[in-house]
Image (cartoon, rainbow, N blue to C red; front, top):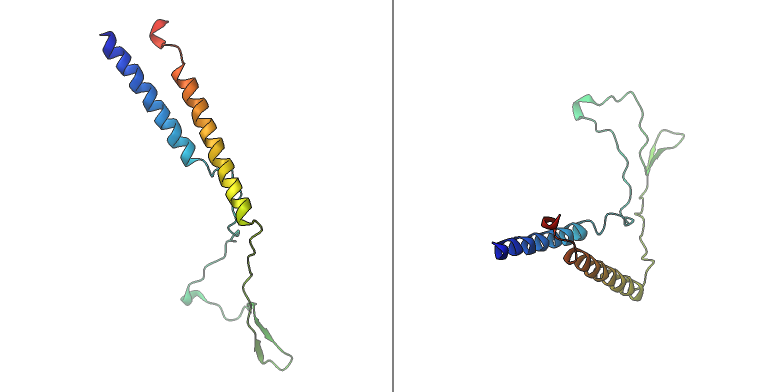
Length: 119
């Protein structure tokens, strides 16, 4: 009976440690700044609902004083990396060390919890 109780306690602790590690791994990027550009919401128009009486302004298109359209190319924005590979490597090592320290601290705390059956 006591062996089964101790086994259940150990299994519960292992399960809670695994759950804690899984939650930590899944939420690791929850508070990082995203490099993805923010997109704006645009109105989608159906082809049959188009109203040609309202002039729309397009990027890269203009009309001159004679009513002729001028079209030019718009170059995409170029993204430049601001971090060197050394900075990326050092930040990855720092993150891994922080996670390892968290895992050790969580394991030490969880394995030294008092037995709830004592109370």
